[in-house]
Image: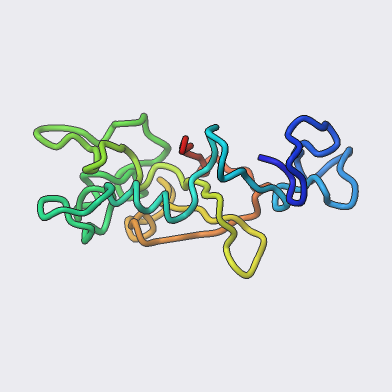
Length: 167
């Protein structure tokens, strides 16, 4: 990550900082001014499209269609940690049992529910960032793969989390 308009990752004056508190002048170090290099091979937040592709299980096939409401199933209790079956965040991979593994067709767990996951994209027209996946505090409807939410990128909450990609 670096600040828009620069490409220098080492200059301490250009290092991304929290957007509140001392040391940030004129908003230049604000999180909403950050960008990422599309040519780097490091870890970063997924774009919203990458998140949805992963949540839906990658390339659709006859046996694993993209018509699932939740990540890997149409039954929220199979895959989602939400306020109908939880009162707090759950351990990763907790939605398994019997012949159901809890993973979607891409082998990813907990893409529906548990915690909202930050994405790189801005939630147009605001500078807020997109959150996807729903959280344990929401109803099942909020955990559907198609649902999106936004918050200030400086936001902190026990219901927010992230997943990284390495292109």
